Image (tube, rainbow, N blue to C red; front, side, top):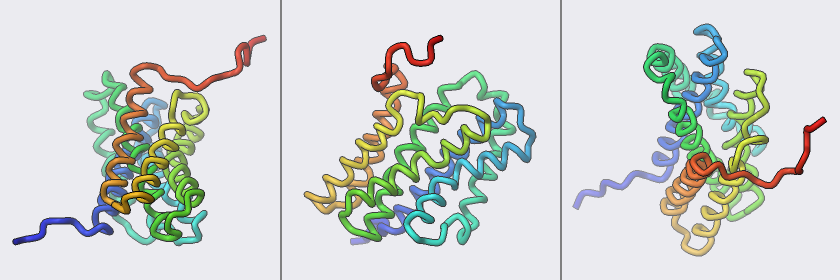
Length: 213
């Protein structure tokens, strides 16, 4: 009987490339909204797509994958070019930006968590740090470059969705030891939580009256 299963390393690599593409799309969207030229669009797409993983690698003491494997930058550039040409057809669908951002958040959260797991085993703090930094690093830089407060600081249930996904990932690994199941479950839960938060406008508590004169 032929075994069609994908090796874990290949599976994680494919997910990482998909997350890179998803975040690169959000970077291209933001750049076009801010009237960047084509070079600015491609730069912001690339920064958004690879920054989270680069930050994670540096923090974990590893040489960044994005600097050794050209496919990451190729994907971000191609994503930026595609959005550049299709934007006129997509600009009425702002929800597309939010959906890609949610997918990128879910995928990069668990990719980062998996990266730390492979290095340090079931070390929850390492998994949490790697997961969150991978998930929010690119988006934070994207927003800073377009002179906006990073979405993680102001939007509903963003980093919280990442945190919950990491907890689920950790618990499944700890009790079942199934990396595939933990990875898929963590991605799905993080992404769905973010999408539901967008739909129902979930917010974390804020100080009443803050920012008022």
